Length: 280
Length: 309
Image (cartoon, helix red, strand yellow):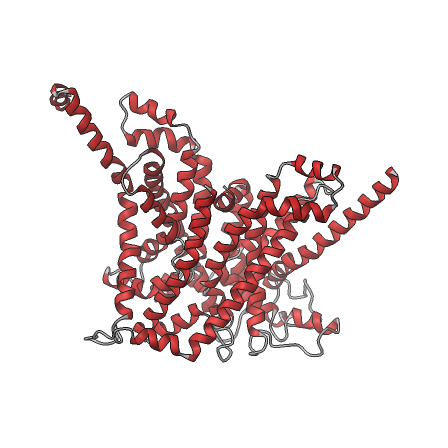
């Protein structure tokens, strides 16, 4: 009896493993192929039969991108914009979250519902007026234009997440500071922020990812090569003369490195930042 | 120090009243950056886009005049709008359905008690991979894979599944399926990770009790797992509906809405109206229509979230 049970379990385990391997091919093969293609020479990209490693294996595609100032500029732009958006979003959201978590005030529910709903406003709806607005504010084709407009996507989520995080912290913590004569600023920055680092890191990573990946506004609100971000830069490579597939794959690998590093070092925060909204 | 003295001379009641008034202003002070940003980035633009949509071609004309609902009539009555609605509906519902199914299957497999932690961790990393790439990268990666001379056609022909390679993204018969497939690949990890977190939160003794009662694996899944995951599934599905129906970059960079409108979505249609044809008023009317549709979905999302709180 126990033996058949063991056998059945072994059979089940094999089944689960096979299914997992099948899924892993679906999930992982495209990525592996991207990596393999980035080391090929451009003439070997579509050779038949396809191979992962070819005679032309080299880092030439990477070298060509890393030595091209125009392409490196895409990365600099993406870093500047994404880091600025992350920093500004966190500061503004921490203020708002503190208000939501620690105070009662008129229209609190209404403002809260507005912030939740803002997340559902389609970017394409905002695009036409943003174009006019950004030109009016003389921010067309500037970092400021991108940073300002990206915050509409990052801020609501950050406020909701940080409010939730603050709500889990006991009120006595910051009220003690108030009793000792400290203002609300002291309570927020000296007490709440230091103990909220895990929540802030999660939200920061999520914000950085949104800004790093944004495409539509970067496409429309910038114009010159030197203001383009990585996602647009990748597309520009596609248009130039012939397709340099190996270079496009190499710039893609380079483009996902920041996210990969964040993922490897902050896996726990990464997950909680992404999922807390849905799971709570 | 000197500044403090007048306050201490006030009657206690007055002090309390003033403190209360001040307390009322404090939260708004903290909220002011958010409110200012939301007014600039949300309120004004929405008023602007509604205004544009009621004028005859704004931005391009120096003196646009009020046009009533003409733009709406033109957009809603056009052939391309109907095509875009149908394509968007197909793309969205199939994507969300597949995300949900794949997310459930993968998260259940990854949560299996039959495997050890290291194996599960390894697979979890592989399964999360599509999530680490921005849409622009996903788009060109799949253009490489689905190229007529690409690796997918080679495998299909070699295995005898198809006789000749297909032009997946550039023939009208397959393009919509191809972009939907790419979107499925790109989006399932978000479901999977959330569902995995949900699965880990289901108390083990529920399953123990079911096993004692003689329930098999499938029965346990239907009677315990699904009901326990229901709140997560509903929130994720509504969020995914909202996001997928707004998808722009993936379509724009793989097919651009073509060939012959085969993959034209509401988002790409609106973008083209504005930035290819410079019909900003038509684009605004279309943008408002999309906004209304999204708000209906958002209403269900907010109501669902509130029901959970």
